[in-house]
Image (cartoon, rainbow, N blue to C red; front, side, top):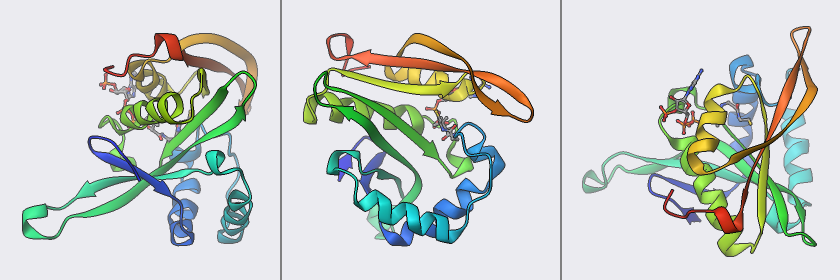
Length: 185
Ligand SMILES: CC(C)(COP(=O)(O)OP(=O)(O)OC[C@H]1O[C@@H](n2cnc3c(N)ncnc32)[C@H](O)[C@@H]1OP(=O)(O)O)[C@@H](O)C(=O)NCCC(=O)NCCS
């Protein structure tokens, strides 16, 4: 487990699949995930099998929050989304990160920012990366704000990189370099 203040990251299990099918078929959740079409349980089961063949550092993490009251003995961890390192380049020591929070009641509560902070800490302190970057749809204002709060800076723009509802949109590139990373942020 990788523990943050209010969340923890753990490996995905097969039992997570039904939640992913539910979340990724919600148009609001998948709006900025470059997934335009519905997915099935079988699609996600195939994704899971392919995921197990990825290098360990690129296998995703489930995002869990703690609920209940420990004193009452009813506390437990609840899955709310997923995140991962991708496209790790060991020559220049860079990696892309991505996340989604499928539980919409958990949006705008700071969890996305906390996930990104944890990924930055893990990427720099555990994987010994030098640059961590992400791509985000320019319309995803909440995501952009969360990434800025975690310390990502704007680096560039891929013009007309997305196509949704009959319109092209731009994709923004954001990154953090090891030397500018502030663990306190
Ligand atoms: C994008 C996502 C990861 C953000 O996570 P989150 O937990 O909601 O983000 P946070 O609460 O940490 O931060 C969101 C910030 O954006 C702000 N925000 C939300 N909507 C906004 C809008 N339309 N305009 C401006 N700011 C907005 C929030 O107020 C908050 O800022 P604040 O803390 O200063 O008030 C999450 O909403 C999500 O998973 N969405 C669906 C999938 C997705 O888009 N994934 C990302 C692909 S790059």
